[in-house]
Length: 398
Image 1 (cartoon, helix red, strand yellow):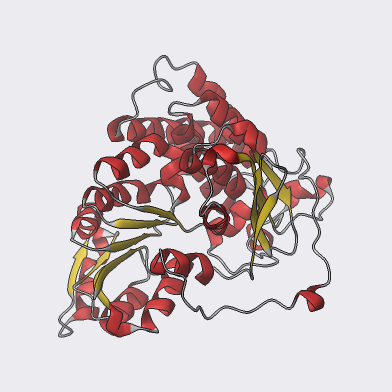
Image 2 (cartoon, one colour):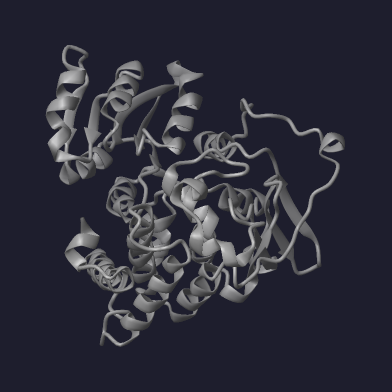
């Protein structure tokens, strides 16, 4: 039996992972499941999969989790250190699906154990790409992409030399506001931003899709994971969300990965790698689909893409600053402190501010320095948000 752990089990990626594991329960020994505030779901999954331990990131929910697991034989734990301890438990395969920068340390911990890490936490490579890749290398650990786009590129490269790659094209649905008039974007509400035309995802990533910050993260992730240069990476709006990525080779050929908008494909590929097994996803009827459409993203609609280019060109710890500011600006939008269009402006301000902080962006790529850059970026973002909101920093932080 393969020992597996799922970090971030209560989110959409975690739940889809459970769906696949539950279809072959005799093949897996579930070591650890972690979640955040959805204690009922976390406990139910842990009991159903007979996990050794269930961990909530919230210290103040320990007693709730303990009560939910009483008499089941599943151990309960809570807090940041407990998350890291869960990631350190020996496992053959670990799903890294914790949202945001919080997923970096648990993911690194799993790699240090030599586990195969299925990486759905794109922020890990954005904040600390070189550190993540080196940690995998020195521990002889396998890193597999779970973002649908990067899984698509990974699959398109099977049997190919990276030196033969001319370009990588990452597709994007365009999000909830792809067809809105530009002058309406500043009035977009969180409720409107959390309605995705194609995918069923969590609140934060759906808003990131609307702003294309998720695609900005994915551009940086592509550079870090595959080692291609920024000028080889492109993005295109593809409303149908059926082609997840394309790889262009030096002979002019384009290899596309085509499939339904169902995360179980990318998760299943990582779960069964290097095999390719049957998966419970829809089979496409190309005649019924009829046509696939593409268009270039509008810079005015999606300023996050230009910010990603800026980060890739700058290098160093710019990715950690970018992500920290992005997460805080998203918090502020969801809380009603700033407008939808202010998010990119806040991130741009923080990146400009970081350039003036001697040594911040050029510090060595260590976990300590990444954490410091992230914290400084969040502090600077809160100040920029408070200025726009006409509020105090304390009120913005809640």
